[in-house]
Length: 101
Image (tube, rainbow, N blue to C red; front, side):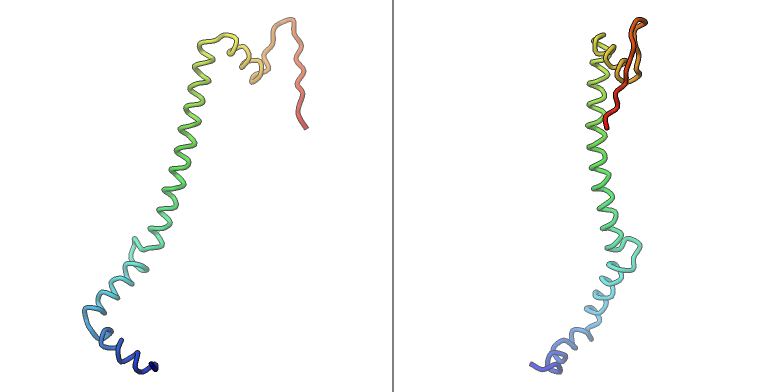
């Protein structure tokens, strides 16, 4: 098949006003419309990123709730937390902070 034979088979399809209208419509929707294919893909990526962040924060909230419950119910845990996080001490103690390299 030569190029002119292929063109003769394709040309009637291109001349058809319905095929041409559908092709222009699809081109417009995919590239030029306000919700084109590129924007839809970018929004899809944002949604996936936000879903991952949501999972992370929900897990963090659950861990913080568990820790808060432990601190509110057990005085030993509360004392340990105060000593580690805020360097609190008893009146007759000295605290030495050792920083890792």
